[in-house]
Length: 499
Image 1 (cartoon, rainbow, N blue to C red):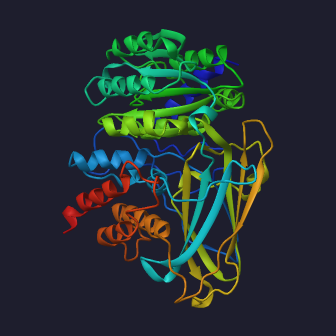
Image 2 (image 1 turned 90 degrees about the vertical axis):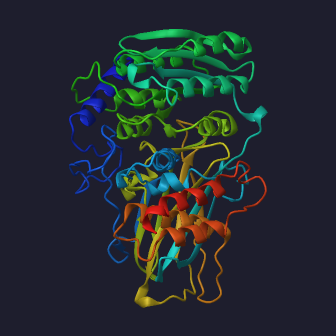
Image 3 (image 1 turned 120 degrees about the horizontal axis):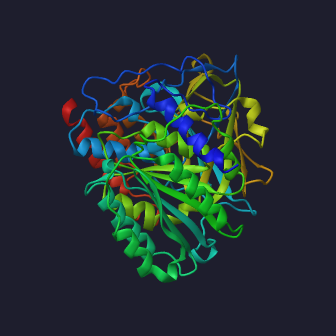
């Protein structure tokens, strides 16, 4: 089975590197007119590769009352935009994934109770960019864990040391962040290091973090040079993870790369078998993206989607600290294969899921525990938005508008658990949106404006800023690193050219 590691990676890379649009080969995904070719727009950063986004359309409740999607805990899209604006480059609309903007931030959601690993909530109000529509906010909160409650780590650091990773914003930034992570890990955690360039090397076998100096010395010695043989490296990483596997540990590969695999690519029909085999054994995959100019976003998100993983873009030292230190608990999954299903009732004429385009699932897959879906880390929040057209223009709902169900597994291989929520009623002139509703709406207005979406309505940078500022000070402990004020600054920066 181990030989399928290389087979899978090669097939994925071939699909992307052939220059065609590769729609996510995601179990349950809808394959339709979304599978379009994509020609980079004039002014786009040469070599940066993003899958084309075709936005979800409005769907009539009378034709399809149920909507199903997998959660997405990634945050890469937001960090990539931050770098794009900082460097004054043109924004590629296909780099703007609304769900990753929303889920970059932590929301003030209630914690799970009654032995569950997640809690869900919902809220409905007037849509800020179209006063004749409503906006539905759905929230999920993963169980928070104290440091002592998180199982020991079995991390395999899979580091790209090819020539394309050379530079202060790539390999040097990575080395600094990894050393900070080691300083914050526990003595009984384990770390191994595998590097790849023209060849593959096990720089450090699995080592207890009580030997932190030894681990950091190996990290600091890394240099970037050569081409990129990523397939064989992935194979070695999974083997190392499996050889040191413990059911009582957090078994995870952390891959750090710009995604520019250019050696060892071949074609095969065996696309998913290997990664899913290791995924079902409890080995997770997190991918950290670096750099611009040859950045392969689509490739890295596809790999993380197939490997029970998450995908983050690292644009700065602050982001390294966020991911590897301040939010390191999110490397531990408290909810696996998390799927959402919303059933709309007669008070809604039509609905549109904002974002999550590559996470849409067939409705029948909701109860199918064999269908893979997204993971939620300890203490992590997930947010989704639907824009609703009320039936017959009725903006006064006096009954439940929809039901919100979530299925998740406490651990890989277990049976899924069902959590249910009735979407709150809405009364015109009475309902007042919460700060978290406004914050989510502001993020959506921002992405709709950035994408110049056909569904943006009255969205603008000024509207986005107004909504976000109304929620700039959440409950204590929700935004200790002040990411929300940074978002306001980012909106201002993006809006400069529109003034």
